[in-house]
Image (cartoon, rainbow, N blue to C red):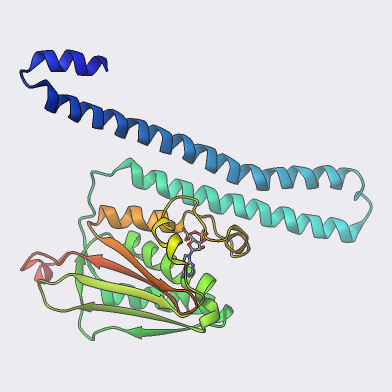
Length: 269
Ligand code: ADP
């Protein structure tokens, strides 16, 4: 409010400036609130497995001290919980690294067809474990986009992992890439044929820690951060994510990349 008074008196037209500052302040408050929520959520997510591990340590020191079967069982649970904390910390570090340099746009040039092909091959093992086959629908020629190779690998690994974890019941995943013409946007889609996402949840699944079903996500070793990391990386690439789904019919996650400027595709990276 003080900022308003000072600034408004320094220029002739106070009204416009008032609106501007007000917007700024409410945006700052919104960001503060988001940050506080985020820290609260992250702490809670870490606290749960930590509480479980300390509980089991106490049990191992006391009642289960001389019971080798119980001991083995509890050690296994403690191992799983520490792994869960490690996954969460990895994801939190990924997010903070991405936030550290929002102004640094990825500058490389990536053949999306080759990149997707590599990710599909590296995912075959996980897919096989979930009883899923991956089908590819790529053109035979390269499709270039501006981007950072490793970050884009992370995006598509995440989408394919989710398709296996949550859409695995559908038995197959379809990964496709297309560009209608040299000046058209580039689209890459990861589609599954599993249970899909109820419509009301679709706009929220890219929020940090948002899960449609917390128990399923935990059972699938999810942290609730995968899609927010995806969204972050895509924003840095001036790309966007669209999600289509029908309950019972599966889910399709499409990444839309802007076309490379004319001539850029033939230049070396
Ligand atoms: P998580 O670590 O829980 O997997 P994500 O951010 O990757 O977190 O995904 C958020 C939520 O979106 C998941 O918990 C799940 O409920 C839902 N979801 C993501 N991908 C799919 C999919 N292919 N089919 C159905 N639900 C999905």
